[in-house]
Structures are given as C-alpha cells and as structure tokens.
Image 1 (tube, rainbow, N blue to C red):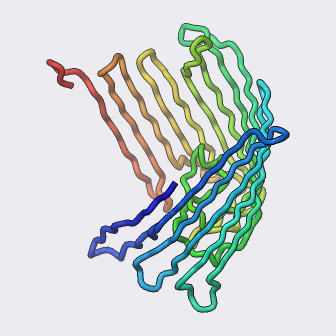
Image 2 (cartoon, one colour; image 1 turned 180 degrees about the horizontal axis):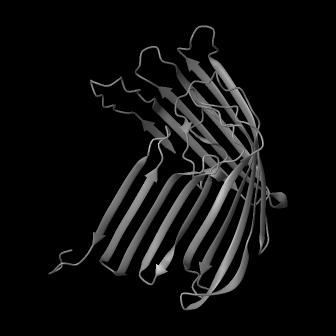
Image 3 (tube, one colour; image 1 turned 90 degrees about the vertical axis):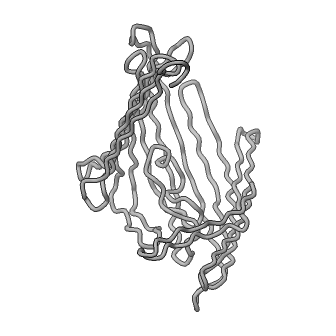
Length: 310
C-alpha cells in the first residue's frame, strides 16, 4: 500500500494556533502472511517506511522504518483454541532538526509475546417460540511487552486509542508507531450467543470483559498520566432481537474504582418490513474532569408516505 498524505488546517483567529499534523511523503506498507509452515506454524510480517514532513520551521522530521515479523502456532479442536505468538518489533528513525545534544538516529527493538485462548460450549435452548442453540465462550488473552525507554522518540503520528472490546485484545494501546506500550496483562471475556441451529443466524449476543495489569505503566506519550490501577474498567454489551421486528443494542463502560458509568450507549431499531424503519439512540460519555458529561440523542427513520415517496 502506497500513501501520500497532506493536511489543510482550519484556524480560528481568536483561538490558540492549531497544531499542524505531519505529512506522509510518502508512506509505504507491506504485509505478508503464510500459514503452511512446518509444525503448523504461521508467519506474518508487518512493515512500513514513512517519510514525515511538516511545514513548521525548525520542527523535527524523520524517516521511520518498521519491521515486525511474527510466528504463531495455532492449536484448535472442536471446543478449544490456543494460539501462542512471538514477534520482534524493530524500528529505526533517521531524524533531522533535532535539538542540540539529541541523537539523529534512533533504534527500538521490542519482543512481543502473547497467548490467545478460547473455549466454546453449546447447549439446546428454548426461546422466542423456537429451538435455539446457546453458546458460552470464555476467552483469555495474555500479553507481555517489555519496557523500553522511548522518551527520546518524537511523536509524529501516535495517540492513545479508544478503550473498547477490540482494543482490549490489541497488542498496543497506542495508534501509530512512535510508542509501543509496555504490557504484562491478562484480558478476560465471557460471551454468549443464541443461534438458529438450522441457519446459523444470530438472535442475541452478550459479553462482559475486563483487563488485569500485573505491573504499572511505564511508557507514556508526552503529557499522559501513568495508569496505576491493577484492573481496567468493565466493558459489557448486549445486541439482539427482543421482538419479532425490533432489535436493541446496549454498550456500557463501568469504572469499579469510582463506581460510576464512564460510557453508556443504547439504541433501538424497529423494521416491520422493507422500506419501513425507525431508529432511536442515546449516548452518554462522562467528562474526564468529573463534570456531568455529554449526552446525545439520535432519531432517524424511513416510512412510505404516498405515490412512491418516503
């Protein structure tokens, strides 16, 4: 994949100057995957070359080269899945416009080890007036990334990611490549689904998950506060058909230390037939400074009026 990217910034003259993002001139990424290695091993490679430029006079610029080869050994039966994986994340920076006394070449090599495991149980279930299959799916994901001092690396394209069900199973808590978060942690999740045994269609899905930290956070972005908790917020969601023509989606993030809801989303959809649909949703996000937070409502729909108009 080849990308050339620049940005236009819109500046309010009455506000502080907007930080101009770095341009990618260019960015080249190459990925490779092979699953037929001896002993059932799988090889994957993620690589990137990017030239960061910025019009700001005197700001640091860089050429960043990243190679991330990985080996995994999936083991799978009808009920159990275990996938250990090990990789080496290697990054090199060639920097310009560095401050006096700081190096213009930096390297970072980080081994990354993880084990992803899951079990699937099934049972017959009577619901919604028909025979269904209910699953119970516990999942454990252990991740270890050693601490490396990364404070000398400037930040070109990196930020903290959102905390959600996808992120708690990710290898890095940051987007971009300027920080690789240290980790010694275990993610746990239990999910359950209701399935139609004839078609495989999913009627309902629910899950709850949490991450547990065995060591404190050491790697940070500039200005970021280190995490000292031993457990993350609790995440939960429910999605399913509650009536023959209606579905509901609910997602929550609960802080067990503060005993309050950090985020709460609920949405409903009523669709009696094609061309007729009503949607309603509510979202709440608590403010980081303990203010009441942000509440948002969404309402949308489509309905026939007359003569082909909706």
